[in-house]
Image 1 (cartoon, rainbow, N blue to C red):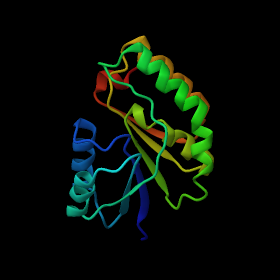
Image 2: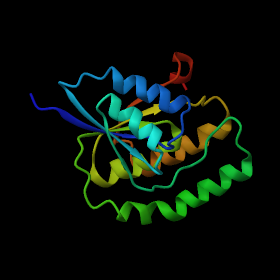
Image 3: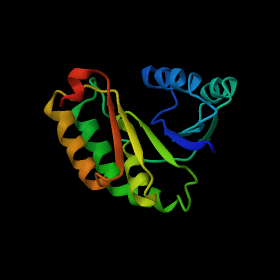
Length: 166
């Protein structure tokens, strides 16, 4: 059986909650079945070194992110949302090939991965770490799900069973 190549899209390269949970996931991944690589929008050598310790490849290629956080100000959300809308097609053009079988989107901030999955018709697993209970999160989720095409998203993993019902 050949290994499935998975591209994990990590929306930032800081030592925070999303990276820690991704690190734990990768550390325990069955390597006989999966060959993981992590995509970052900017470089942080400490993060790259941590991934090398567990034998995970990584690469840096800028992509637009949408800043979703409980602590984000509305103007920051609007700015990054419009930045994404205006620039995601430009960034998509920089990806001429994507030699992966599956995409793993690590939080709402990695929405660009939905556009990649749609362009290359690769199934995506969307790991949503944010709480979706407020209207603020539900609207972008619906918009981007429709933009990317529902046939691309194969699984949505939520932080809790309560969130999964939403």
